[in-house]
Image 1 (tube, rainbow, N blue to C red):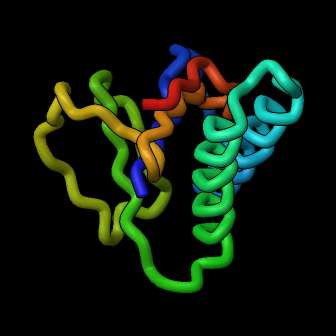
Image 2 (cartoon, rainbow, N blue to C red):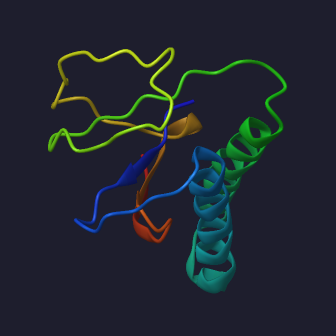
Amino acid sequence: MEFEISADGKRKIDSLYNHICAAVWNLGQHVNSSGAGMVEDHKEKIMDCVSQLQSLLDVDKPFTWVVHDPSGLSTFSDMTNVEEAPMDREREWTCPEGAEVVVNREGVVQNVSAQ
């Protein structure tokens, strides 16, 4: 699964769990508030992404969380198992089935597009 939470320039100190929860809640709100104005297929793709994010919260199996931080300011309280690598600035992150979702650090949906 690939998912993006975009930077908004504001410092945010939070757990990974809370970042995922905020994204789940805000994506659900986005779908609910769009009502009939959103194509059904688009809603299904976004909710599929939400479902996959929710499954990460249960940690049924280990997963890797990749942080792309052009500013280099992201830190983790426990750097055990954290690997640093050069950033691929050209990569596009998309949810399954081609729904692209961009969410800021507060989990607010900035852009959603079906491909």
